[in-house]
Structure formats: structure tokens, C-alpha cells
Image (cartoon, rainbow, N blue to C red; front, top):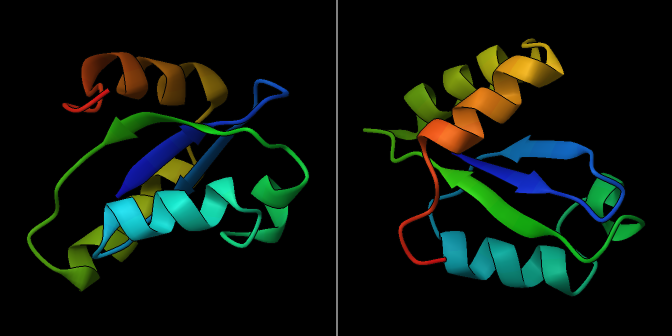
Length: 82
């Protein structure tokens, strides 16, 4: 599960089993329609999940959070390789 910070300051939440590939797709404008018009995007948080089902549940949960909670999540789980 990952959280991106877009150029306009908005946050985008998604999940993947290959974070590097997915980030490259977002950077190229192919990751999602939402992020394509808000490039560049920066990885704000990356949370490992035990399986696809858990990642999808966490993504849905995070998308329902208010912006302040998403920002707190990003601050608490910065990506290890940034």
C-alpha cells in the first residue's frame, strides 16, 4: 500500500505488488488518471501488507480518512528508500 503526494498537494492512495514498477508508471503518466494530470508525484508513505486482500482493505480504509489523518499516516510511515 502506498501514498503519493501530487504536485498540487493532494494525496493519492494505491496498492501494488511491485512498488518500483508502479511508481515508474505514475511518473510516466500511466499510473492512474488522477495522478497523470498532477505530476510529478512523490512517494509519501509505503506500508508493506501481508497479502493482496489486506492491501486492498487498507487502501479502502485510508481513502475514507480525512486529509489530516492521511498526512499523519505519511509522517508516521515515510518510505525507507527516499
